[in-house]
Amino acid sequence: MQYHINLNAIKQAELEQKKNEILKSNEILINQYHTDYLTGTWNREKFYLDASKLIDSHTPFTLIYLDLDRFKVIIDT
Image (cartoon, rainbow, N blue to C red; front, side, top):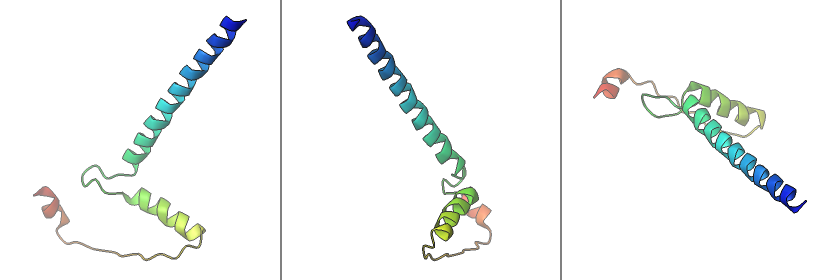
């Protein structure tokens, strides 16, 4: 009986470890999904997600919009 309990504890620990690995991988994937690969900044999808959360929670916020001419030239240097 003692052996059966220890085996269950080991399996439970292994499952917990796998779960943590999956959660970490998911976090990395979500971060990659929300990040522009060229600039490393948050992308439009992340902006929409964060803005929606602020609007839904009625949290006041300020939006600053920059329109950079010839941004590609800056990025390519």
